[in-house]
Length: 234
Image (cartoon, rainbow, N blue to C red):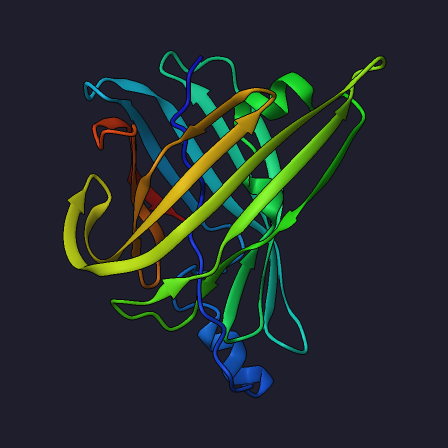
């Protein structure tokens, strides 16, 4: 089973002011609607537009904190035949200025399926989203490194997100509806042993919804895969 090489994903600039707790919580819903039970479902396509599978994200254990909001995100994948499901979870926090997504979410499904049961040391830098965004913003890097103990040797895998920027605003239509989005570009570099590959991507992010669409490309800029929002439910 193949899944798009993409990341739930993109980053931000920290705003230099602090917000009172109540207002901070409201700002945390600007892009990701951090609501208990909210479920976002996506359809995954290959470069030829053929359906490869589906993905879903559901918000769990959403709670208010002194600084904003915290939530657990359950994510699941399934192939185009509705089989071979795989699930994982990660955390999302918000202080009113910045939404932070656990760097472990950058690890691909294939990595987690193949190496998830092995002894591993995982470190990284969280993905950050702004609660206020505008065209032209340059966004900070994120990344994750996983060192796996394989007995006689250690294997290291890295995923880096660099060169992030908010390119423009654009209105797009997907199965879930029509949305006004910010288009965010990033370079997504994957390193494992002697293999070093870069897969540029674009994400369409809408206020009150989050990720509406993603596209991943090869080094020549040709489309490799895409993901579109198919439904929203609570």
